[in-house]
Length: 438
Image 1 (spheres, rainbow, N blue to C red):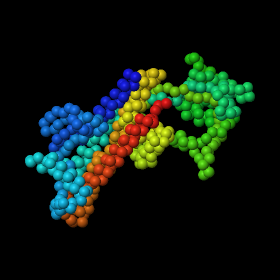
Image 2 (cartoon, rainbow, N blue to C red):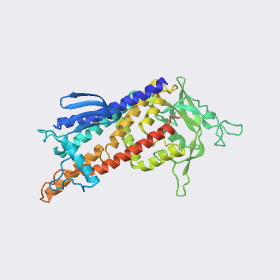
Image 3 (tube, rainbow, N blue to C red):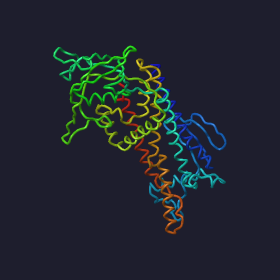
Image 4 (tube, one colour):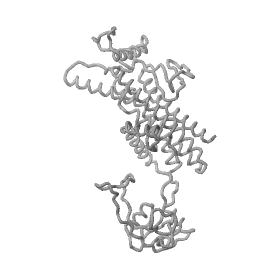
């Protein structure tokens, strides 16, 4: 139980630090560009601790599910000529004006030029992308530690298993007298043998060895293996067998009728052993990219995935291990990882770091979604302003001024409500039907 709690605490602290650095990514350029920042807060709700340094209050709040910095003048005032609020003002118009009023209250006398909305477009984009960029940087650092420091398990050129026979029934768990001997066992190959060469070709990877075997059914191949420090030469003849065709993602390829496509390949009845190998630095960015693409796919298909989560939560369906989970689910997985007695301590530490790296990738990608209140929404507003001003200049018209993103407050509230409901659903699902390692 202690190890379980330790895993939860480690990931919780790591997530809190990630959120803090995300907000720091906004804070540093904001201050550098002269914007007045009244607050830098980790979490939401009542303040647990705060301290003022200069004009900024730094603190921690009760609910550690995010953070924010409070910049002066996030929203521009209403355009000249817009009607004042009256008793007949609509509900949504009232929300928009309230947002403008609250933004105006953050601008003290003398600070009129230190507001966010008056910054050049590129500076606003730098400020808003500073947070996601910080998460990306954290992910790169953590992936570097995991891949280059701890290493990852991959197939080696050492035999891990050698089948004694070729089973005639796929459901068999043991060989029978009627089953023919597997070519590898018949030739004398044993678990622990390291492949040196096959048919004169030096073997550098398991995929290379597997490719040679698969492409030579019925041909006698000369295997050179290393066993107990000495090299042995053995003759192995692969059998012809039918195997399903898979794509680059490892998924079975099907034909127009939905049937699995198969091909005839060579087979000798061996499997590779795994070993931990430290990866080159060049493997880090591709790993971060693959993780980012996976998160992007989850976001694009989120409505469908949330339906599946609801079916799992209320109908007992099996949870998708690659689907969305809440912070509760992340904590449970962290606890399970840290309490795996069978796994070495280094492997458990690497898994927790990789989990934190994946969380930072998720924060990076999710915050780029071009919808308020996410960072990407402010970036989209700034880009639209630049485009609008450019077209006005080309057409010889007056500068249209800043984009009034306060008009999107009603949409923002809807998005916040959707995110809140989605989070509640995920938390409930992670309590009653969680994703587990087993």
